[in-house]
Amino acid sequence: MGKKILLYGGKKAEYLVNFEPGKKIQTHLGVLTLPEDLQYGKRLETHIGKSFYILFPTTRELSMRVKRTTTIIYPKDAGYMLIETGIGAGSKVLETGTGSGALTIILATIVGKEGRVYSFERREEFFNNAIKNVKDTGLDDRVEFHLRDPATDGFNIEPVDAAFIDVPEPWTLVRPVYEVLKPGHAWVSLSPTIEQVQKTHDALKESGFIRLKCVEILEREMLIRHGKTRPKERMVSHTGYLTFAWKVEG
Image (cartoon, rainbow, N blue to C red; front, side, top):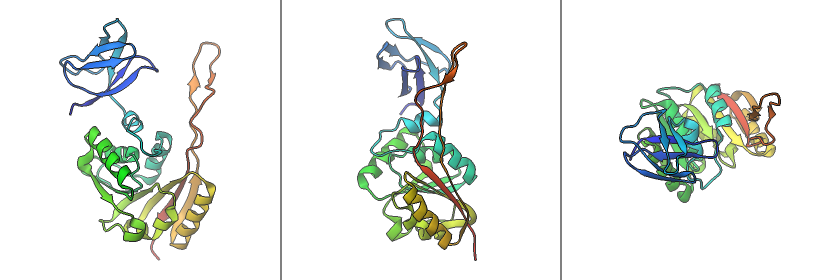
């Protein structure tokens, strides 16, 4: 499988593809022929003379463009989750609710080759699609996939540096996570409703987690025009509430 590249011909003409020398790419602006050598920043022309550029794909593109069988965690939320949990190269992290694998890709990128992502999913149709999506990015060598429900079966993995929870009932995972999360390290869960947050908050507090907090992240892009710059009419608003907590002993 070739290396992922982003072909950019404008905001409405972006294509994430595998680079293969001489490969023909069908676009709504004509047919592109990929060059023999990969050169980022290179300008290409379609058969009707429209320009495209070869860009290095960001983690945002890799995660947002997965084949979706579920909702996914958006970059605006994922970025805040990464900063607050403090993970980095070499970290061992737990993810429950693999879904379509979007957050899995982000976590695998951050922990690097020396790190490990333990990803759990209870629905087989989601599980198989997520594995394909992660393999398509070439990051599957640092991910360990598990098809089971840890709320009933536990995790049975090594201690982890952070836990990322994206399931409808996160409160059912508080005790299992407590067993594998390193002391002093963070839990974070995403929930779309306040009622879910309340139940999760209560379960975390009862299980000995401290420093609990809940935030909502909004993202609004600016429309840049000379003399009339303003916010765009549309924005990525509510996607979920992020609940953070830290494990302590005693």
